[in-house]
Image (cartoon, rainbow, N blue to C red; front, top):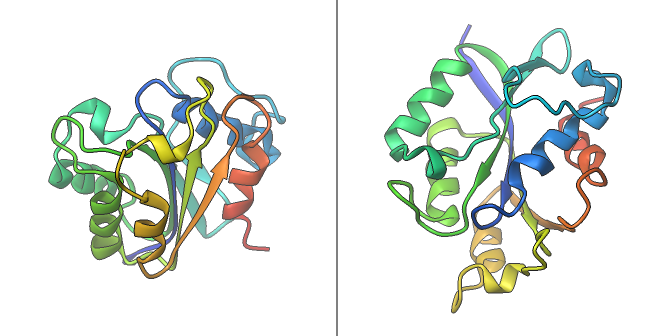
Length: 176
């Protein structure tokens, strides 16, 4: 069976702005096996069944933070999603950092490689520090740039509340 990556969700904000916390909040959805409780342990599994045929690769650390190159990020994602129907959720930085490009180039690379049916970008805006999306990359309109990419949709989540957006994020992976 070949890999079919159906949907990709990227939570985007600058460093230390709550991206992994927002992604962890998907555990408010009981499908993830925690009875609606967000796990507080540092290490959690990265592979979840969404249905009998579909799985989610949940990545909590951005390739930017890990110092991965785009090639390493793609290779790791391919290794984790070997074959079958998959969805992806993970964090990105708005700007280039270490070896990874900015969010626009990173999303284009992901789409070029995996050809997902839908891609959702969830900006934390405001972040838990109160920073708004229009300040992430001065002189650029990241929302406009991302919306110009086919299959990409953009939303802003209020990142000031740790446990309020998880079901909104998890609903992106509801195929019923």
